[in-house]
Length: 245
Image (cartoon, rainbow, N blue to C red; front, top):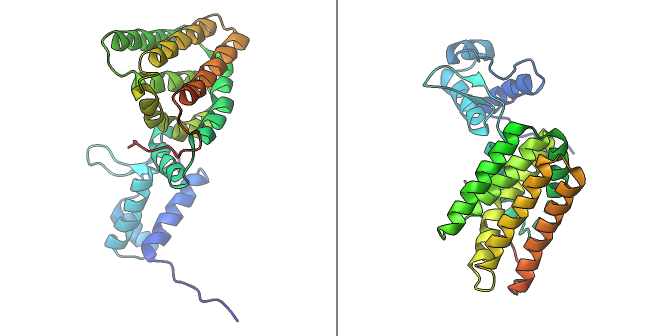
């Protein structure tokens, strides 16, 4: 017996057809899409059906518009794609230990690659991040957002788009993980200071283009992260919360 075939909504066909043109490269980033009227004529569908297909594409980040102008093809930024993946990790009940294990592979690798590709302008951005972090720490403010920014800067310096896409959903889960860690009395003062010290060593290694030291200090930094959790008595198998966009 044959299985029942579920009909595909017409707006989904519109969405899939345009997405195929984008993914095959026949429509590239920056290319304008035909107007709704033109697409309706090409597909032989009503404009409201085409509009619904375009809405799905726009929500996915594959197309967009500026100041109400016609839609054009976009290359989604990794930070736009990450929240959905982060939510998926949370729904899978990813634990701190799992988060840490993956980060122990990605973060030292990013630091090592960054030491090869870093230029003076990127060092300046890292130094600026470090100065702001010192200022916030001295003022008694949270440095979590700046820590996440630092690791993103290192990953961007590494110059590998696949690495950026792989680590960003995990990076967003560092917000609640670090907040939990820094809120604990045993770690509220020493934890942030040790974090800043580690960043100093990593930046110095990158400035020297020292691959070995950059990777070593990032690895030590990540190990210290886990030790902080263990010191505070947190269960490494606890699921990570989500505080993203």
